[in-house]
Length: 405
Image (cartoon, rainbow, N blue to C red; front, side, top):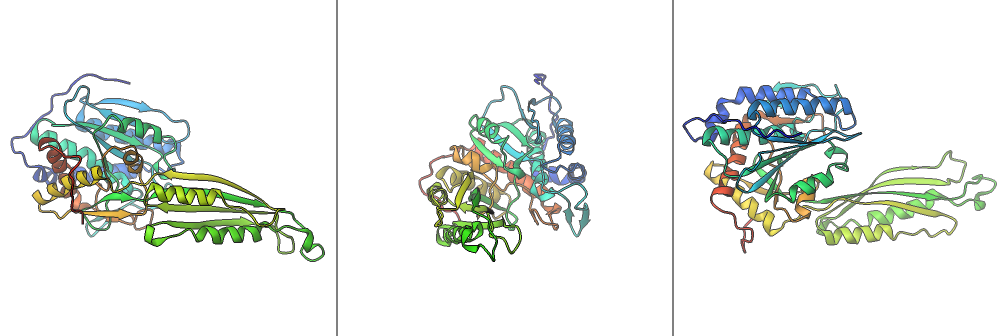
């Protein structure tokens, strides 16, 4: 679906982003609440579609027909969709957001308390999604034009592994010069994420021979016994110095206590800082064997998200944001985290990526999920100022030496 009409953008005379955003704070809040009320659990196709329509309505309200829409319909997950301005000059900057959440409908109430707004998916990451829209809106309204080419990609399956959006994310990112991931920041208000661990999962099954635990114990081959040995080997792969963790988070097996168990199953999560560790862990897991020849082992899985590594290009991009923060009187710091995002994909294919550009708050995937709404204008201003610094003053992709703290 394409629309090539152009809309004249109304401008205001004073080029001052933060006052503009502050003046629109109540409108921003109304849109944020509208977006959060459009609940969007990852597995509910109808609710995801309603949220998609809500995003499109908000987007069109701000930009009219200035942007061209491209849609990626999905059969089972939320749809994915992209907006960009046809033939817009300047560096292409991808704003990457997902709109699906981990919460079933009605589980979390929406409420305001002491400057915080609570609700399903508000922190992770509907506030950040809206921040990307208002950052570009503020630049258009205060500057009158854009020195870059914005690309917005909204996806609907991040919380369940991005299996249908990964290829689209990578394809779009390859056409862009940098990626701004609108995921929430760390606990520090203005800490941006320049390093995320890679995430992998395995399912492992052992099958043995059942037998009566009293009369024919020696005729059985315990799947649980062999799995217990496997679990110890898996947990032994954890290496905190390297930032590697392996966790057996779920186990099932056996039937009743007086039967030798013929089946055991586990689910394994692993996190790594770099691809070298990813290869070590994957080889170790996929090479696992059992000591009892009468027990079979079946292993499936692998690395879901490659690590977002501390590359020169990513650090260089962070330094631009840090300088933008100084201009606004904000101390922007770098952070490394264990969780993954869709930014892991874009960084792994070599596109400079900066993560954590969403709104400060807390409680991701927790009942306390919230944003500090009073900081919304400031964080949007930081994103906008970073874009200005990035596109009008040049950007050295190979800075030589950097100082990231």
